[in-house]
Image (cartoon, rainbow, N blue to C red):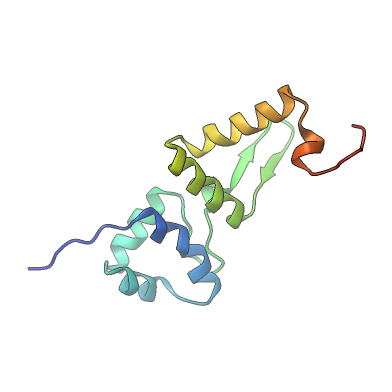
Length: 118
């Protein structure tokens, strides 16, 4: 009898880096102690691409009426990790951050542009 192993948030966060290093999904599944099909299904549910280059495929783009806002895989992974630690949805966290920056005119502070006028 085999014990089912659960994938942890840290495991999901490490997938883009493993793929970037050339590790394929079969090896990743072996390292995590799950079957390749389990890895594929669970990553698909979370919008994580298992293609080389990895990342968070479907969830990588935040759409604005004017144009998509493309974010790097690293940024998305860090945003998800922070949101998880705060127990909020990553989309909500991104929205709240942007709304706070706009409402409080924090552009220069966030971008570390001292003494520059907007």
